Amino acid sequence: MISRLRFGAVALAAAFGSLIAVGSPAAAADDHFWTRSCGSKYYAYADNYIAWTKKYSGGSCSGHAWVRVKVNGDWTKWYHASGKMTLNNDYGEIELSEHKGCADCKPYLLIP
Image 1 (cartoon, one colour):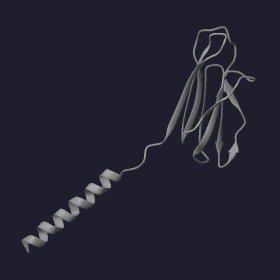
Image 2 (image 1 turned 60 degrees about the vertical axis):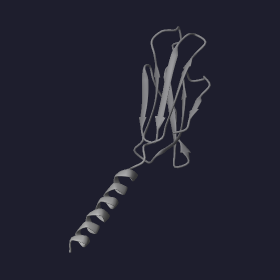
Image 3 (image 1 turned 45 degrees about the vertical axis):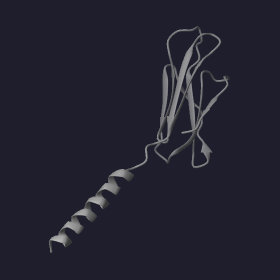
Image 4 (image 1 turned 90 degrees about the vertical axis):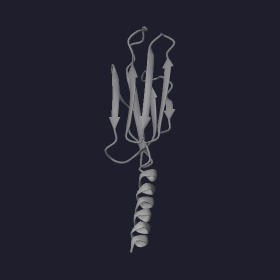
């Protein structure tokens, strides 16, 4: 009887330990920092659930922070704001995101 209890406890501990070790995977993330020729600084971040672009003070650019995401194979339209533009993904995981510092600026691709 004692050996069965000991074996059961060891099996239970091993099973529980494997559950803890596996856990849930962390969301992948990517980021990028750049400075436009006018001296304005930008930072972009994306993971599978959120993407944002932030424009920091300084520099002479009047451009906004721009972002768009690709979800289920389709790109959203570009969204922008004067300081920080954030897109939360309510429709599925973000596959890719693009970020830029003005309407006609070069976009930066992030891969979460």
